[in-house]
Length: 126
Image 1 (cartoon, one colour):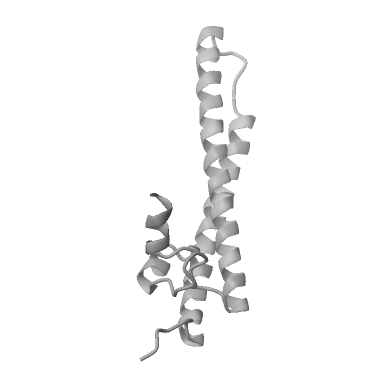
Image 2: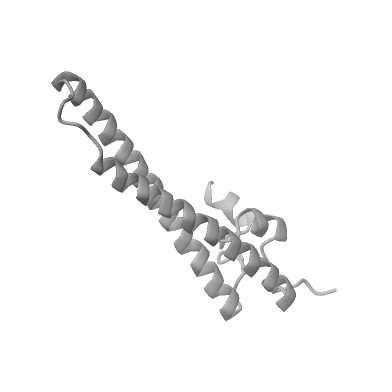
């Protein structure tokens, strides 16, 4: 039996559904993160003691940076999922960009936007 070189239409539909579900959740999380970022800039009282205020400003800044980093990562994740949907449409989804072999279903279910098989990923680390 020849080695399978691409997923069937039904299999691709299953992955597309999985990706769309993850996209929906990721977009909602990004919306919440962005909402937290804008809320943090609106808060703050002028009546606070200055040394306490300085500490709070530092904590606020650190929290904003952390939220910004998380929002950036979330946006990158969304972009990667959207690119995976494009690969489904153009017939290249599930094919490792390094080896040209089919990426295992287990790996794609865990990381649906991946473009690398486990074999290729392990070789990258060497």
